[in-house]
Image (cartoon, rainbow, N blue to C red; front, side, top):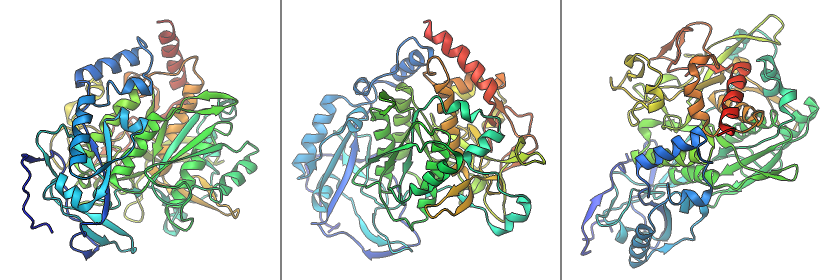
Length: 560
């Protein structure tokens, strides 16, 4: 089929950043799909606002000069020009494809979703070749290699979803027997117990419920899986957080309870819910492919909120415990994430993402950050090991989580795609801090804030049968950091409009505690005296100081 000559009168050109490598470690079931096979994909048009205009809006929102944008207002900023959407829709229909109904998330991010036969898709995208593959676990998927060609006259920034291979992995680690001797103690309890040991006033935090959430790509999030949360909450004597499921791109909230990712979901849910017992945890669940993963965050940005005590509260953001090395992502996918994070910040939201569990190389041959934590605008959640006093009830310090070669280590690296951000430049650090060990060029550092990730000091996660396991990984750091930031927001007279901006503006003012002893994640090291380190970002949240300065800034913005 792919040898047929294209007779279209239009000129075609590769979409920049669409280059993708062929899959490895799988069986090719069929070299190419049959023409009648059904496929679906998403087309993204250019952002209607210029980068300068978006930055101006971000500055206005961050300063309190204007309120965060509504979902409807996003269309005129991070959405697409109506004429561009009409052009794309017309061309799609001419090719014999069907345009799917557009959601608020699609509209606010310039997305047109399409379905139809493989033959029609190839008419629209000449040169497209999808193979049918089976991975080592027997899961079937479509895959492509090379660039995607599209009509040169169409305003297309990216095309996603034709390739359905799994694009992200979990970032949790169980406490392995080899690490038990080093733990040298009984467990320190759940995420709630550990936060208390870190000095967080958890009982006081219970009085200010919030609407938080996380992204899930596999495993179960249903009623049965939630049984573990009910047991943990019962043992703590607190309410059970309300769970709201939001299916994305054809997924369901329920899944395979025996899938290893169910452990991931329990970790995300319990880490957040046990620190927000009277609030709401929203689960955005989608298939594990590049298009669906990005759609989850777009859906979160467009989410209208949930009721808490009879009052509709906005979603503060989400945490992400999934990822894959930056080098294994297409540049168009990474740019899509960047655009969505701009939309999130304009909405007054923030997003945390695990930096990885395999050290600085992230299971590649050279130093590379994990995605999407590497994307500019993300709060990268790095991992530390907590140091407890002799009672095991109080945290006295932190060190870089690095169990290699016996176990994992926090990720963290320098992006080869995203340059040093304006926020990073504002820190006034030596330029060498931002140099990649692999490319030897400057780039954005993927780690922003750190928290507990070492399995040796990880939280207890309860199962529905009453058993519990100690689980670590930056998959624990991401939801923990996220919900702590949410609770800080809830304690303010008015939420900070730009959490990421606040973090960088106040990083020198004592709102974080850097590691208390030197450490590394392989290629990158960090010292206690460092303001910003690739393995750990700025360090862990100093609750009293962070809250003090946040209250001052929030009070100032409320008078503008």
